Length: 124
Image (cartoon, rainbow, N blue to C red; front, side, top):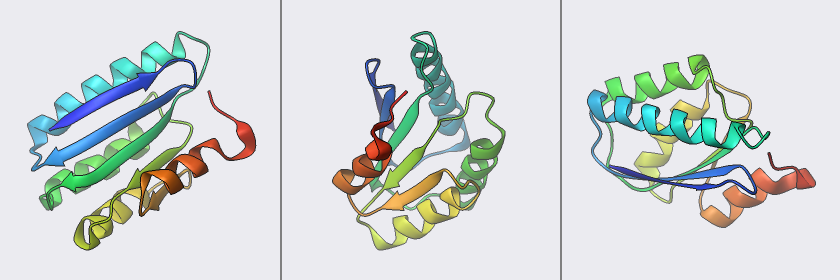
C-alpha cells in the first residue's frame, strides 16, 4: 500500500510505502505519482521525491525490477529521489532501485533524507 502527500509550495512529494506490493499495485502507485508530479509541475516547479520504505515488506524481485525500469524511463522524472528505511533487507532492495540513477540516494531515516533533498537550498 502507499500514501502520497504533496507540498506544492516546496515541490516535495512524500511517499509512505507499506506492506507487500504486486505489479498491479506498482501500476497504481505510478499512476498516483504521475498525477502528483503533474500537480507540482503546474506550479512551475520540478518535484523531488521522498520515499519511506520503513513499513514495507520484502518485495518480490519482479516488483523491484519494475521500479528500477520505471525510475529510468518515467517521462516525468523527479529532480531528486531520497529513499529511506531502517530495515536491513529492505535497504538492500531500496539500494537496488536507487542504483539506476545518479540523482537517487538511500538513507537510514527521514531527517537525513530530507536534509539531502533540501541541500543547496533548492526545491522545485
